[in-house]
Length: 257
Picture 1 (cartoon, rainbow, N blue to C red):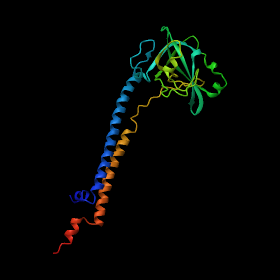
Picture 2: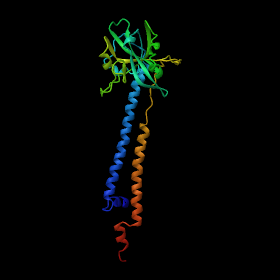
Picture 3: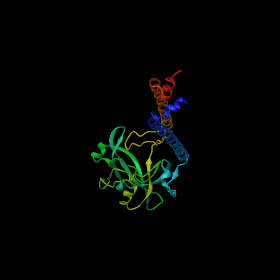
Picture 4: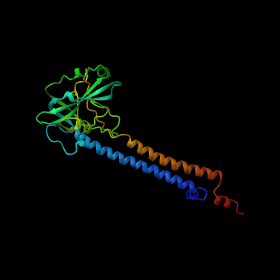
């Protein structure tokens, strides 16, 4: 009770209010991180369902929400249109510079519909030497097994090179220059689970982060900050009051007997 009187005395009331505001802020940030954790867990549950789903046939109609198909395994047959291939610049592979080959695949039996296929990474030396054509060996009807990725819109719409060279896999921008329709997703050609590419184009296996992130640790951090701030402030007030007694105590001690 004496500590409360000290905390809300005229001498300490300003500091007490400030500390209460700071502590309340720390607690709010802790609960905000717990909310973020719940959101992350919900997203992971949806993603896990996507990962466990059977491969999707791109020759069949897609759902109305293609963004929900990210990381979904797919299979499709068709023929590459190398004449419309796009070169994605400034791409790296294990620290090495290079480019990524993005090629339309005309889907078999779908007439005028194609899907952009990320065929993999090739070294910058091949691009500089004009030797990309040697990576265009998949002629005729081929089957591509991989997973889906979302478009990468170029929101700034500036600095985009002309022709076949691009910086981002923007489906809408590429579709404007093609004589056929594009599906609203990108198919990433992936190597089999039990094999790795040794020759370009190098393909990366599907990698998905199902961790819960740092949110729980951050929440504990904010709660600890709140407790420490309050505890240190109370300790400081009590210590200061010992060195400089509370007015009521001083006046009581100075009363005549």
